[in-house]
Image (cartoon, rainbow, N blue to C red; front, side):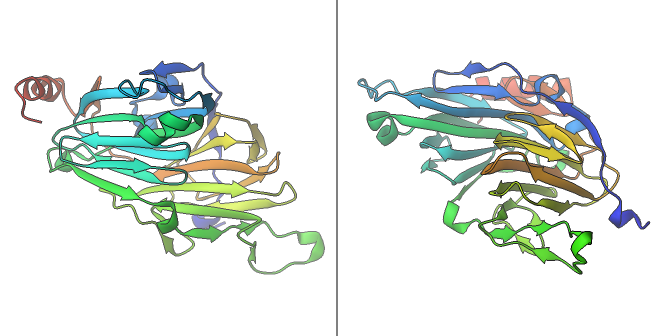
Length: 309
């Protein structure tokens, strides 16, 4: 069998961890738990998921829910809003609100100070809030580049229908491409079935939102062999290579092989698929900084304290 057709094996399944608060606006599952900031998940560093939660209207809009100003250096933050609205402001002059399906991709690089809150309008009316934030490492040569901000609207993220696994009993031949309503992948970054996502990245990174409306079919996804590949359940449940995953579980796939098979165990299931080229460099992480050495971390703190961000 050619290596391009080898199925990926599951290396490990990390089950839903306990929740904790980030600021007073984000009740999150720290999805990577003790595997955060390890080479095993490179280029991905950390992943927080705030499951759907009802927030009442806020009477005092001078004190919005969220996280106030804080610094970052050496990596990127990717925030996806599923329900509600997230408002972002940073030291580069970016000020933006993202709503359901929108993404903000912030490259901290040599240093940025930002804040993240429930938007003013969402705070006024209240409602269900759901989001996630992924931290993506930068190769050493890009860690001290100029910061960058990419606002990506839901309408600009292409959807691609999935391919179901052929039912040999019926003698089907070739690809069985589904309708978008049955199963699709929204391509935020990277490429799937020839369609590229709008986000610009500094190393190969695939970030897809996969929606499965049916439990009746299995679907096959293909990846670059040797890349880190993670499957996260945002809503519903699935089997991956025959193993069951539920809400906020993540499957870490072996880097060998290039294909995996998924099947929903609940209707209207939603997944996040993360895949990327590992960055073969040391990871030195402390608080809001991710560099390659302790010396660089100390310098980051000095630079922040002297107002160089």
